[in-house]
Image (cartoon, rainbow, N blue to C red; front, side):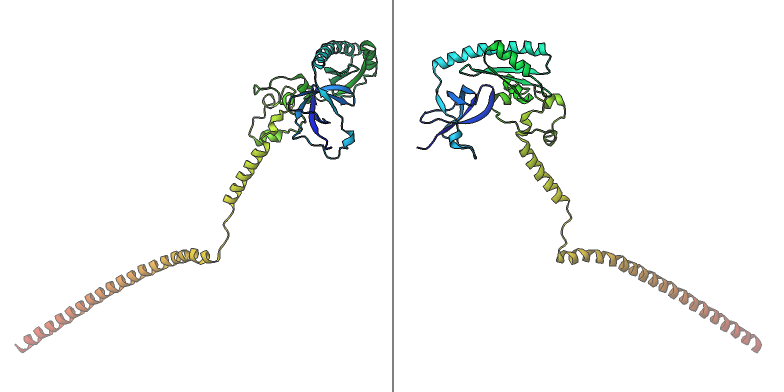
Length: 304
């Protein structure tokens, strides 16, 4: 028989765990009672059997089973445990103050079979809570487990509304937290104001990574276009001559123009010299004519 699986998440965690459902017919958002390493607990189906697959490297025999769908008595038990969790949280906070431990309690979770209580807390450093666990076990008469979580997980457990006006992503659907950096905000041209890019947990908002890849791809294409537009055109064999010919012609034109000017000047000079020579010739002729007339008058006087 082919084994069938479903993805189940629990109240205090958005992480999805794979369970063997056997012959049960389950769908998304069904509440089920499952067997876990800590005991029997209630969870919700988030990945239906049609899409659920066994994770790689996980042994089929090591997968826990879904015992049944939640019944009315299971929901009644859940309400009782929720009321007991509030009392247990208050007792734990009082003892933390009494022991002066540098830790902050986030939430308490009582397993469905009521044989174990898990306290989730945040702390900047490691905390020695051995004496606290002994006193809590003696006061609550159950097995006590302390678990330190990160600030993002704490925000997901507490829930709330972000600056976008919607439920926090960590409380709604995020099962894992991807790294978020300031570079993502810079790439999206966002104002680097900590009040605007940080969530209620005090860390950078997880939604900065949703569209980061799209922005990076668009910016990369824009940079490629800019680089292509600024690159020098490749030298081709034919355009070299066609481009140089006008420059050579342009260089020769002034020489030709200068030649024409010099020719005009030479022509003007030749014309001036010709006119001067003509005047000289006329002057010499007039001078010769006057000499001949003077000699004729002398001859006439001598004869008379």
